[in-house]
Image (cartoon, rainbow, N blue to C red; front, side, top):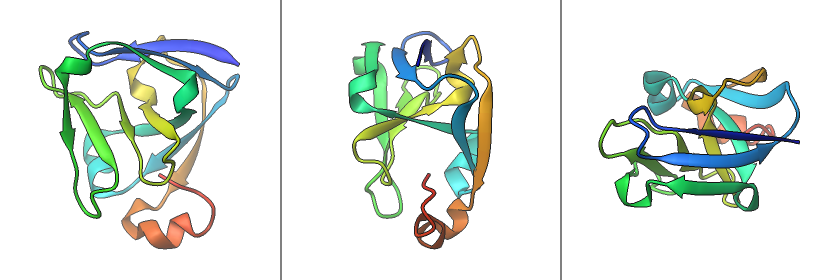
Length: 124
């Protein structure tokens, strides 16, 4: 396991997390929000994640089923992590928001056909 840190562009939101040794499993989703924002998913159990600063800087956005809670910095607009509907016990960290970057093993996920793709055992 490795320890990483990261956060948003302006630095208001900062986190620490523990994740598998590189290459770290990650998902590249083509759903509307992920493709527009360039979000690359790394799932981290809640117990392996710590929000260090920025709780008051986070704003929430929900769409579709409303189950996922997309959290973004209200200052710079960056979504460095969020609560996905597919993994209620984990946070999805944006690999692009980890510093320094880690080596990834990226798998593609068809988020435009979420229910069908999730039924195949791979989730956004």
